[in-house]
Amino acid sequence: MNLNLTTPQNETNENPNSPTTKTKSELFNLGQGSSVLYIPKLLVYEESWNHFHYFNKHIPWTRPTIKVFGRSLLQPRDTCYVASEGLPELVYSGYQPRAYSWDEFPPLKKLLDEVHQALPGSRFNSLLLNRYKGGNDYVGWHADDEKLYGPTPEIASVSFGCEREFLLKKRPKKTPQAKRLDGESPSKRVKKSKDPDQHTFMLKHGSLLVMRGYTQRDWLHSVPKRVKADSIRINLTFRLVL
Ligand SMILES: O=C(O)CCC(=O)C(=O)O
Ligand SMILES: [Fe+2]
Image (cartoon, rainbow, N blue to C red):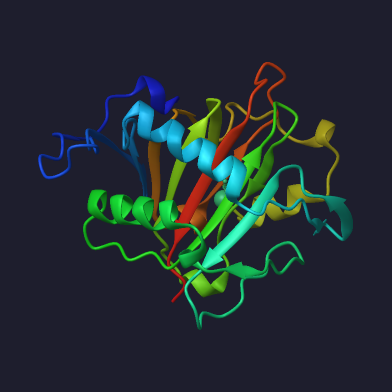
């Protein structure tokens, strides 16, 4: 099933309190306590481009060396981390990013306010920024399941610039049978009747996608390489460190 083709569970109307923010939203139930909310136009087009140009120019982007399955590699995208003071340090893939302050980037604070308005009850205190310079930049399959986010984190992802595909796939279940098959060569396995559950969202310029519930425990997500994506995409994921 491709979520782009399914009917969303509900739709809400535009937010009358915010002249620049539209909150027509689509809620997708992934089952078993996981869900994704997609707001195609969180921000209007021009404001989104203003953000894009500001972040592209003023964020102190770095491309760190990370560890994946014991091997060191250059992270295939630029990154930066912003967090409120006094939070525990974030460490992912053997890398501990320096935490910049919100105060250094006023437009980020404005965007944080807009995200909070769109998601009543949310109170994000940290932000991971990613810049994909072209179609060769990507993020591989992963879940943002670090302990400091707790068991059911809400993660709000705002995208700017080049549209890229965001994929979700269900984590393989470690059933006793699946465990036995782990060690066998593919030819010995019974041919799978279907692909695992996988969903695709084309993340638009100025859009907001929110992962909720057990999405980090039960699903993986990625933004794969796309040869034809030939311009810059900037993505911001807002998180709450508990
Ligand atoms: O770029 C995206 O849309 C996703 C980024 C992401 O998954 C992450 O930063 O953990
Ligand atoms: Fe992620």
